[in-house]
Amino acid sequence: MTGETWREIEASIKKWKAEDYGRWPYTIMQKWILVEPFIGNGDPPADYKIFVFGGHAHYIQVDLDRFGIHKRVLFDRDWNKQPFTYRYPSDDREVERPSSLDSMIEAAETLGRDFSFVRVDFYEIDQMPRFGEMTFFPHSGLARFHPDEYDFRLGALWP
Image (cartoon, rainbow, N blue to C red):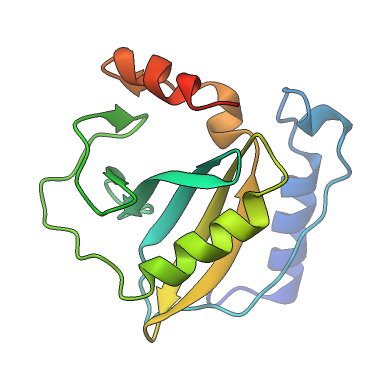
C-alpha cells in the first residue's frame, strides 16, 4: 500500500471489513484489522507453515512467491521434500532448510499441544523465527492434497 493516502487506506479497510467470506466460522466472527510492521527486505519472506496434530509437528509447508506465481513445497519435520501438493503447484527449486527450523518446530508443538490440529505459521528473519499466525481451518478446510492418498494420510494423523 505504498504511496496511498490515509483516506485510500481507510477505504480499503472498510471494503475488507465488509467482505462476506461466506463460510462458517467467518460468518460469526467479528472482523478486525491488525497493522504490524513489515518484515523482510522488500519482498515478502518465505512462509513456513507447520502442521501440528495432537501436539506433534508432522509436516512443513513452505509458500514461495505468494504475490506472484504462488508455489508451495511440502517437507516432513526432518526437511525431506514430500511427493504431494496442496492447492498450489510444487516448486522444483531447492528450498534451503531455515536455520531456526528446530526452534519453529518446538514453538509450534508448544502452541499446538492442547489442540487436535492446528497449523502454526512462522517467518525467518535474521536467522530467528517470527510467529505469523495459528489457523484451525487452512484454506477454509476446502483445499485438497494431491495425490488423494495424502488427504487420507494426513487425516489419519488426527487424534
